Image 1 (cartoon, rainbow, N blue to C red):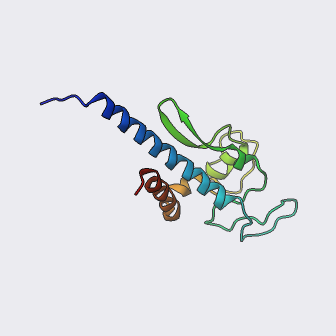
Image 2: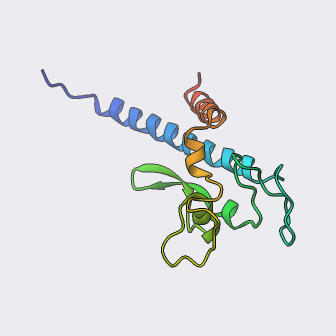
Image 3: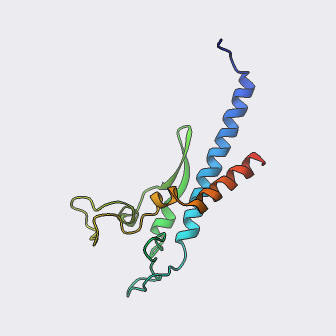
Length: 138
């Protein structure tokens, strides 16, 4: 038996879900900035300002371009997060070398995945859940 939701309740739920989506997207960005905007525990390469990350770690930012491209934005009716206007380093760190890429890599895969790493990171998940709980008042 179909039923109609009270329009006021429907609007209230839409607003609640929107706040929750926004909080989770912003928490993901804050987490990425926090783990990438620090010195790594890998090798210190000549000509780079920061000690690099070790294998398995999030990449250490060597320029501000990647950090500054990270954002949470509403696109249409949904919230998204990631690297907007991504610098070449964002792609080089995450994805395999595309045909004709000007960035040389020693491996066929991304040097230091950062966005896909976030998907399986329990600490990132906890930060996102904490933001959701805070937004929902739990």
